[in-house]
Length: 403
Image 1 (cartoon, one colour):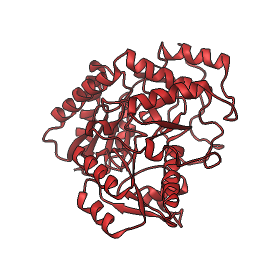
Image 2 (cartoon, rainbow, N blue to C red; image 1 turned 45 degrees about the horizontal axis):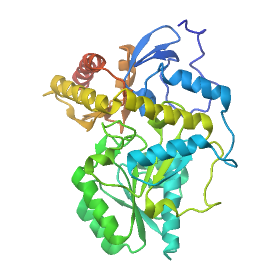
Image 3 (cartoon, rainbow, N blue to C red; image 1 turned 120 degrees about the horizontal axis):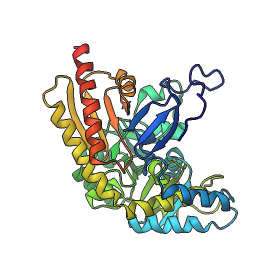
Image 4 (cartoon, one colour; image 1 turned 180 degrees about the vertical axis):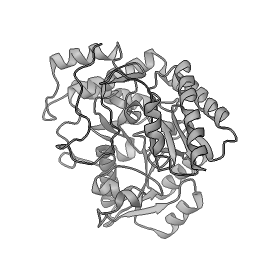
């Protein structure tokens, strides 16, 4: 494919300055590879931040979306959207839950979950319902989801925050039991099964089971944010399935549409009928193009065995990183599951972002000290080995210079 004329990358005089961008613009992609407007090639270890499930220009996805664009892109939720029912039925089949609300982003899905919890509480006669949330959590940047987020740096400058959140540390059963004994207005627990922006911190299987128990004993909703870790990224459709439990509310987004904006809130029987007509809505959510993207993404994932691929290739990638970084001073640990991995260092490492780009690898740094890898789920074993071969020397050189 011929690259288009070079795009103006920096400075950007007309774009609001909300991102610290690298000075490159992407032109096109194929599989797990992308090219910039200068023709430089990169191995995509970021996947659009866990969005591009099927990589770039997937030969099965592209014609399906082209066909849908030729039929209908948007119709509005005033009318029935058959593709909504098709995608909802599939998500319920995969999750064991019962009903779905569609939106366009993870933030919207999480905002919807918070509203469900509050309405659930009010319906029980609780005037000021509270939701248990977590240290280092990230649920979005709206005022409500920002308030649920556990990052003071992200919250700074946007007070007063929304009340009604009780914060606890992750994987501490005693802390959540203490909340159950002391906070009588709690109606839900809201957590990421693997904290993404917080530094790739997984909730343990044992902890998830204990939280499910505490929720059942106290008539709380268990709300599991699977926006980043869901849709096959860990080797199961949803990361909580490793614990053998079911949530009451499950926000999804990112990988659900392989790059087309899709968000969803999947609910079980306890939460499915909390909303009635007029309680919540969306203009763009559930549009035919987004729904077709979701339907086709799942179909291709099933046909191509991408859950098994995420588990197998993710294990190879993790073991390769652990092997090459073993004993390196400054490397704290490699953590995560499947193709959602973090390399935690003992110091801020934002400089790695630019170094990796120069070396032809796309990734991100989150929580200041964690190198995050969330590549497309089509990543091959050979491409995983290439990530290790590019990244590990960069980390070693960075740590050597900084020590």
